[in-house]
Amino acid sequence: MRTTCISLLLAAAACVAQGAQVPLLAPPNDGNPSWDKDPDVDATGNRIFTSVSELMQLWPGTVVVQGHSFAPCTIPVGTVFYHGRGDEHVPTVPEWLAFDFEHSYFFTFGREPHVLTFVTKRALRILNFDGLSAHLSTESQSIIMYGEVRSGPVPTFEIAKRLCAWGVKNGIDGFIRMEEHFELIECDFESSFDLLASLRVIPQDERTKDGGRFPGGRFPVERPAGWVGSLPTDSRSEVDVAGKWHDRAPGETRVRVQYDKFVSFYDPAVTSLVESRRDKPREEHTLKPLSKADAQTKLVELEAALAQPWDAGSGVDWASIVHVVVERYGERIEVLAHTLAADAPHNSSSLSASVSYEIAFKARQQVLIMLAPHFTTSDTPGSGVDSGKAWLTPVVERCAATHTRGLPAGSLVTTQEVLIRGAIEDVMQQICRRLARMFYLTYDIEVEDKRLGASSVVGRSAGRGARAHDVARLDAGLGEV
Image (tube, rainbow, N blue to C red):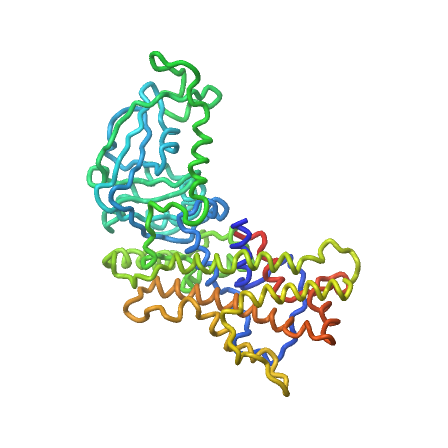
């Protein structure tokens, strides 16, 4: 599954194992070259990487409810939106738009249900709140509205009013939030859209549903003159169907994220959140402990980024770089974890030497496939004095720098791009480092007198797992998104 693949990928770069993780044996300390060091326990590079990789995708925001990012976006000219209501009138105040008809149809009501179809007449500048931001997560929105994090319910039209008041000052046309589907809060219909159609649609037969949510209710239903047969009866489920079209990458492609303006609360500069999220899985992270000073700092950063030209970034396709990393390593790391877990069904205190060897041999091949692009014929341990893992240094360095070595630097890159670049480098460093450690463990496993040592890599000791320490990092992230 795609979720598991990404989980395993990020677990390879995780800063700490989960509290329930059983400690596994690590390779001996062989002088630990400079590349072989654990990241700081509070490092957030992998969290920033995840946030970037999951923007405008429905499923991640459904699981990780509390968003931690402001993501400025654009919506191209010619993009179609829908608005469901109980009459034919074009809104003159901030209102909600749906990306797909099914979402808007659910919100039609009364005796004159209408769906209005709009098209953007210019490129729109939008701000996206990640997480389940239209339902359970309004923390980041409260920073825009009040300059600090506030909890508690706020009427939806009050949210729209306050967001749009801020948006007018900062050149933002609307705001994207997410519940069962993405929605757009549009601040000024006249300046942004042309009306394509205002259709009185067939009513929904929602007799089993509570009609009190909408003015005028959903029933009794009056069938159109001459209509034969049933009417749509489950528009609510169709909202979920349409939303799932955008569950995973590439996500909602009608929105173009401006990564050069991306603002993250996982920024190491945000110190007031560090203690509250330590040792907690990502789905338990929250902005509630954010200090007012840190909230103001990030708000000022966002407003400064929005004030810059919208083509001021480097032009680097950060989304594709992150996606390539996920594609290259995600499923392969999942397969590797499965290989090294092959002993799980066994209850015996130890595996046979032949089974241990087969597992270690297969794992070596899988790790080598991932590291092969970074090996040269000069990268061998040589003979004579044991150099430990140091001989793998050039391999790790090439691997870690694969996606960032040639990127522009200096004034061509915004502050926000520097943060994303650092996150990619952090994740790649930990992936490459852990793969190298595992390869070091199994490098000479095929030598006849080394085969007996295979049990120290994949076997069991006193009822405890004794596989490589790095596989613990993979296993620890299986439940993480």
